[in-house]
Image (cartoon, rainbow, N blue to C red):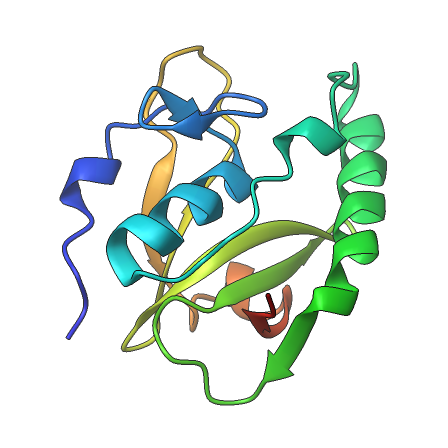
Amino acid sequence: MVPSFSAYFAVPYLWRGRDLQGWDCWGLVAWVRPHTFGLPCPDHAGIYSARPETRAERFALQSTLISSQMSAWTRVERPPPGNVILFNIDGLPVHTALYAGQGDFLHCLATRRPGQSATRLERLSDLQWEKRLEGFYELCS
């Protein structure tokens, strides 16, 4: 059964955000994983303090951070709900999401307008995401 995520759909994108006031893609993972699935998740907001000026700088920073954290992740082939999904954007592993079950995933995308809702429930089978899928991961503690 897919949990209800309706309370999260109004949450806007916020760089380094970690709660219902706003979050980035890892912020969503760090909030929803323990609150909805009861699974632990590190915060990581303190690791990246400066906001990059360009998309390329942001992706380079995110890729470096994710790569440095992956030693604590275990790749899984059949993920249960609550596992982390990693997507490649522009060839870099920079976007995280949560597997929601039944082929759905929950994620947050940067928006052009501050305060705009950025949280989405989408299908892994959608071509734009299927071709970017890097893998499913369980976080090790």
